[in-house]
Amino acid sequence: MKMSVRLAGLEFASPVLAASGTWEFGLRFADVSNQLGGIVTKGITLEPRAGNPPPRIAECPGGIINSVGLENPGLATFVGHFLPRIGRLRCRVIVNVAGSRPGEYAELVERLAHPRVDAFELNVSCPNVREGGTAFGASPAAVERITRLCRRRTKKPLIVKLTANFVDPAETARAAEAGGADAVTVLNTLFGLALGPEGRPFLGGRTGGVSGPCLKPFALYCVDRVAPAIGIPVVACGGVMNGADAADFLSAGARLVQVGSASLADPQAPGRVARELATFCRARRLRDWDDLVGRTRREN
Ligand SMILES: Cc1cc2nc3c(=O)[nH]c(=O)nc-3n(C[C@H](O)[C@H](O)[C@H](O)COP(=O)(O)O)c2cc1C
Image (cartoon, rainbow, N blue to C red; front, side):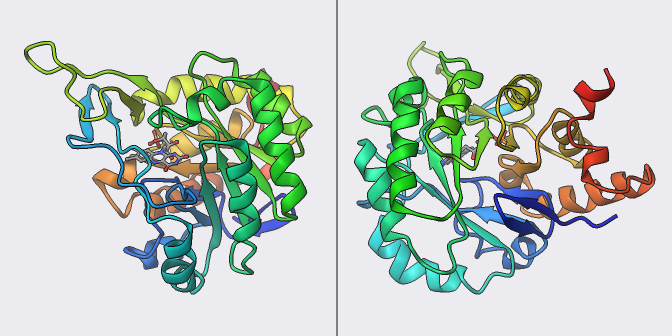
């Protein structure tokens, strides 16, 4: 079976991508990036951001809670310094963008009209930035508005990355579709709080976002809920550790799958997930993706 898959008019050599924020700009382990369908960059904002004070990561059973706070070099350094090097990767490049105003998203996608940027992931869901993400991602109207503004400023595919923090992602997925999105990513981190021994918040940013294997059952539930609610494809994300996890998300209705926190523990993880998924498909003699994608609802 061919491992390549099409989404929003783009051919991906594998359905496995590296998730935003856990793979920087794909350069540190370029050989692994080149084994994937694509990479999603760290979230880029118009201006550089220093992020939250340390500590930024707390462990929890089956996962981590991060409060990185969208640290990134900002648009100008990204375009001038990183993008030329990212452009040499042999996989698809999806740039994750975030803003504290709807117009910022539109400005970012317009100014990133670079031939090596294949698509955008709109992070309307980052839970760490008080002035922005959460409020947008929790409001279907805001999600639709941001998507529509971006749609007017770029012809490149738009993938809206959804949250489930205090909102039904099926509703925001429909709003993203109405605004002109080509796909949605389900799911960003869930709110979390880690306390130190004296009951004080442990993380420098006070609260954070939960990710890792503990997120998988909920993320899978959300993919199963969102996929039949919309007519555009779903990109899954949440607790993928191995090829069987990736196959679960495809069965639940996703077309592509992202590997996030697993890469923080083992940088070879995304490549391994891609290989394990290929082995999984060969062992079951699947002929094409449609044999796997969405079979949970088709067959049950
Ligand atoms: C340290 C860290 C930084 C992250 N930064 C971003 C980011 O900049 N933009 C974004 O959309 N998601 C970001 N995420 C969320 C991940 O892309 C992913 O949605 C989430 O971690 C769930 O997937 P996982 O369980 O495989 O890690 C970040 C996650 C972690 C752990």
